[in-house]
Image (tube, rainbow, N blue to C red; front, side, top):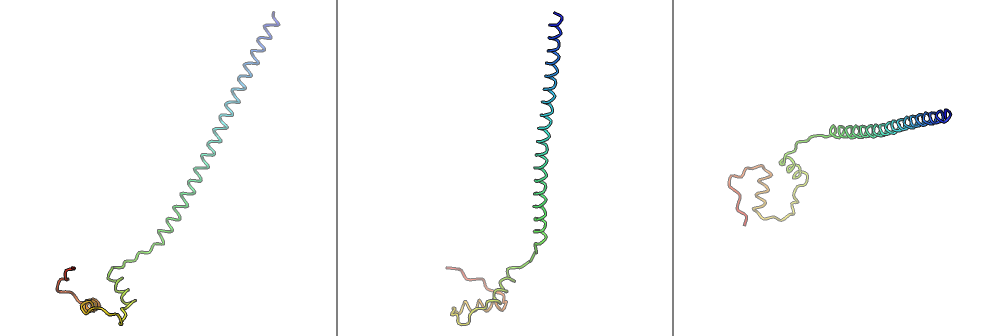
Length: 117
């Protein structure tokens, strides 16, 4: 009977040690899995930071290359008239020609414009 008690105690000790070892291995695996997840997450965050930095750099370069020009409608119209003068062979009514010549001369209209039918 003494031998039976020793065997039972030995089996219990081996079982407890086995459960303890299994528990420890499970904790190690959980820690390893968590470390892998953190590494992947860190890599994704690094990639996101690189993309954001790249977009910020290209945006800053694009903004720096913007050149502001102030052109009024009068300047643009005058430029187009000088660039492409009217063909002298063009047949227009006399009233239109008076308006065109007055506009070219920069004359102010004192009378209001006629109503459009």
